[in-house]
Each structure stands twice: as structure tokens, then as C-alpha cells.
Image (tube, rainbow, N blue to C red):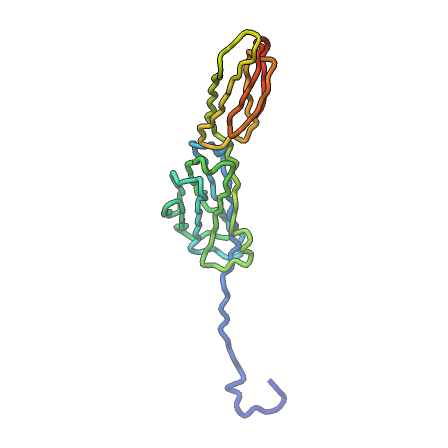
Length: 219
């Protein structure tokens, strides 16, 4: 408006359409229960929440298992999940409102020897709503995997045993796996006290001639 007379007042008003984008701060937290035992299973739980301020539409979660883990099962009420190899993709069947927590997703994985000594599982969440704080859209869960070994010991001697002379024994330690043994490995021979020990390529060589108290050594 103005104090000056406007001969054409019809264009003194203007309107503009403003599109307001929905924003939703999604967060995903991945955790597991129980140890990651080789030839056993580990159970992961994926928890998704929305801090708002808008509702999140078409919320999707993806979880790709790392090498050493293979998918055993997935269960999730309120989600539609599909799997390709060892990747899980889930879509929430409804919107996730502000300050709401989605039903948990449970992923069970088989643990294989190549998971030793540990693996990290990563999951992500996304939606059609813009997320101005995307740093918490990814969650990593580190799983320690202890060794599983099958040790075997073989002992034999070389030469002929003669009174008053040394007799050489050879002790061979073998690991049949399925994982490496981080050591130390203890070898005990209860019949020798005087001995010399060498280790070459997994072979423990013990030399001695007295048979009395026990002997313990570590490899």
C-alpha cells in the first residue's frame, strides 16, 4: 500500500505456494546377545526409532552380514522382510510417528570358522522423509569370536634305548582346527626332568634321559 493513488489496485496482492518437506530423525541401534561361538549362532536385534518432528514413511532397514556369518533366520512383526544371500531388507508396513519405536527386527546368524577372531555387523535405516541428522542412520555391532581348536599330540622316539645313554623323543603338536590356536600351548611329559626343547614348524623335540618328576613346557 501507499499514500499515492494506485490506478490498478488489482495487482497489489500476491500469493506463493511454499512446499514444506517432512523431516524425521531416524535412529537405528544394532546389538547382539550371547557369544559368537564357532559352529554356533549369534542373535542380533535391530531397534529403529523416530525422534520426529514428522512421521517417517516407507521406513526401510538393510542388514548385510559380514564374511564368517551366514543368515539362519529373520523375524520382525510389523515389517515385510526379504533376503538375498546374507542380506536382509525390511520395510515397515505403516508410518513411524514422532517419538515412536518400531517393532524390533531379530536376525539369527550361523558363525563359521572364518569369523574368528571377530566380525562387525552393520545395519542402516532410511525413509522417504528427509533426515537432517543422518549420522545415526547406521549402527555397527562388533562380535568377538573365540578360537575353537582340536589339538593332537603324538610322541615317538628315535634310536635304541641304552642304559646310561640319552634317548631322543619327538613330540608333534597338531591343530586340526577349525581356527588357529592363539597360544600358548602347554605340553606336559611326566617322565623326564632333564631335557632340551626345540620347536620347528609345529614339532616339539624333547631330549633327555632321566625318568622321574614331571616336565611342563609351553610352546
